[in-house]
Amino acid sequence: MSDELELVEPVGPEGGPQYRYRGAEISCNEVGAICRLRLDGHPFDGQQMGDAQQFGAPVMITSLVDLWVTAKRLPYWLTAAPKTLARR
Image 1 (cartoon, rainbow, N blue to C red):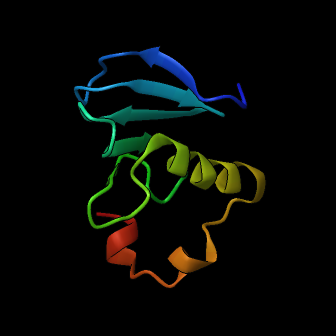
Image 2 (tube, rainbow, N blue to C red):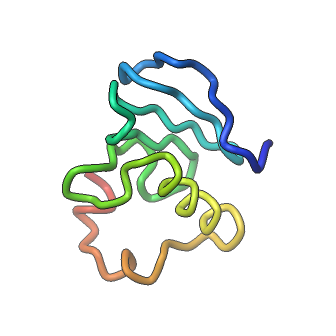
């Protein structure tokens, strides 16, 4: 499990770059602005992030992964989000 954002494929399942980071898989669209996070146990596992959620770029998602891997929690600004946002 690497602590570096690793490019796995330049064109992955979402049409853009696919990365691996600390056990997570991050698959992005063609422009790399909307990405899907895959990380077992994470509340946003399988969700696309971007547009309305302002942490779509891979470097922003890595901060969510870091906090989850080290402390099993979300940033304080997401903990007040309704459960419908956390499990769409």
